[in-house]
Length: 101
Image (cartoon, rainbow, N blue to C red; front, side):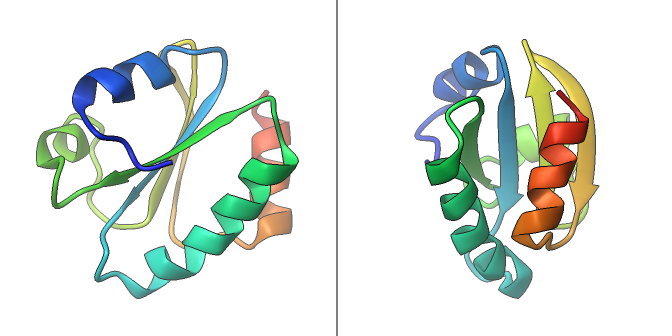
């Protein structure tokens, strides 16, 4: 689920529908988001979910205007659909994904 390089990131966001979690390993709310994203990922096959460590990929974080973490960005075929900042409980995350199809 965590990207290995920017090429992989670009391939995934250019897919039909993708959710990107910009996070840091030291961030408390980011750690809370992890199990929520795992659960959503295992229950949905209509969206690709990836994690981007902002300490490893500072340029991606800057490119997408990430100022606070966690930042969740929904992409559809490479275009930003919506963005959320902060922790989201699973029901709210699922609702947000569904509302932005």
